[in-house]
Image (cartoon, rainbow over all chains, first blue to last red):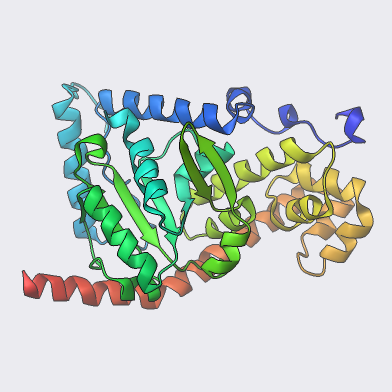
Length: 87
Length: 250
């Protein structure tokens, strides 16, 4: 507990260390870092298709199948090949 | 140029004079609750003048609709989202979603008054205020709830040393973190007692009973998810009608 806040909880008490650095950046720093992450994500074969989210009210099964194909295509375009998987 | 795609969309929106607020994942990035988002979501004022500007922006971004409903103002009024994808070189592939009504969220003129304004370089970005953003994230989707938790944790961290009455009420109303709720209840027992009539789980926070509080938080989340499912039932039916109509027309 942080004495200076009269017993209010410290962020270190409630979140994982890897999130602390992110929380403590300025909004502009976060925005710039986010765009770098986006570029990295795409370079690694990520896709801008919507997530396959069966809980989303926006999409039907046909939409989700299309998004899955787009994701697979993005991986192929980036040269990412799946060579082994368990399930 | 894809790393600048979000910036390009925001810049085009800023220069257009469209009355809109950044919401969703990108807003969570700015507030510290997410690391990145694959699309850019806006809540927009859906009057005819503003919608003309939105259409102009869509033209500048060479945006195409990727799903129902069609890109028409009436569907925003119905509470549906319009899903666009940019094809302009500077933002190729970037998705832009537009809504004008969201469950739990006040009408646009009200949330506009509570917006946050940020400047990123030469671009001014109007962002949905964090109180409204939290309300908008109370959906049936599991992935939205960690966002709420993180939004609240960041807000708490940034304001815990000199909180306003509104800050304290915000934590007591919306926090999903047991330690924050218990610490706030300990520090502000009178306010917590008053607010417990609106949010009964605060009584567990006053008692300092972490286990009971965790259970109550989970129940609260499940109730909100169910309310969101019920809200979306007629809208999903409407989307189904529009899909069938689109298939007939194609």
